[in-house]
Image 1 (tube, rainbow, N blue to C red):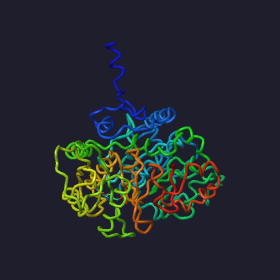
Image 2: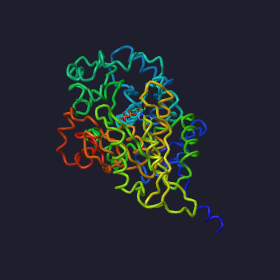
Image 3: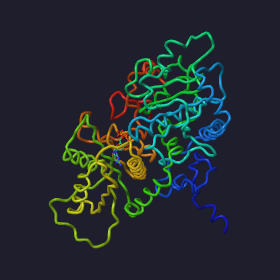
Image 4: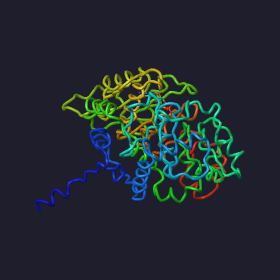
Length: 472
Ligand code: GDP
């Protein structure tokens, strides 16, 4: 009997159901194997097929990654400007655009695209992104080497000689057998009509055939891949449940580097670890839809009291006498601004709640303004997204990719505070934890397939963004 006791211990699932490779030095990236100490266990197990495809991807990345002979060969071809025959190693180079949330959702989208097309994902890390994330693939690097021959990647859209949309129109039928060695893909919300063709069937051979794809996007374009029939079969094998794409791929790819992990764990242990429950509250105000702080507070309370996420305060009755110590319920508030914190905290200690619960309110930072160009600002943003993902329940602001990252990493279906220009003064429960693809409208090939049954089944309009698409 003695030995059976140890078998009944809960399994130590530090590899997250096989999602993570065991091939890393633990100390070099503590967050990779320690997330279970802070985040609730996921209800979702990755499919064996996804696990095997990740291991296959890792092998490909090791074979083709920076500092390999094959990488050098591909670089030579890039320099020659021509690709005359298919190459063994093909690459997607991710180029950052917009804030950290936008960047993260596009890294995940680009990675899924790389897996589907057997390409290798390299990320162009601007200085402000240095030391935020650990290397995700064992025995190699995903960082684009600094001597990469194409320069000024962030501003390529201005005059890229090989902009995909233009090449597709002009050169797809080239009969001299030569193709460009790279294409620039501009998949941001302001793409041109010709760039929309990325998801069209007829573009896939050219994309597949091009050794280097330089991709700039600020969109979670994963739902569109689900509407490209080219990838339908593979995607259905990878994900039986379509609403966990980011959840799995994000937890596979995005491990805060040790300095950020220090912020996360110290903050958690100092302020949040003692709570019986934690409600995450993310407030994001967009210039396009201003709202006063009083209105915002009213909307938050309206939502959280109605949905029983937070208790009401008792304005009439005298406070109950306190007869025993109470373990608090924590609210983790993240926002750029100060002001909300004081209002909520004061309200909850100056008045008793109708349920007798004690509410503790914490806000790790108030940066006042977005400063994506500053590394330490981004570290705090990542820390806060991660802490929000450790919540038991999450309230987010509609439209915000910052909130999307937190919800999907945490496996949480949030309550969304609708943007004041887009809805009522309350909140809606999200139908899935997946991020929203904000701007699919232009993509005619997605629109063409909208009518097809299988495509409609798991892609719906987002709750927070009219016309946006999300996986459910
Ligand atoms: P989105 O604009 O809401 O979709 O999210 P992004 O993450 O792409 O851009 C917003 C940026 O503003 C973040 O990356 C942070 O730099 C900053 N920011 C916005 N809200 C917060 C917050 O609650 N906490 C912190 N630390 N930074 C924030």
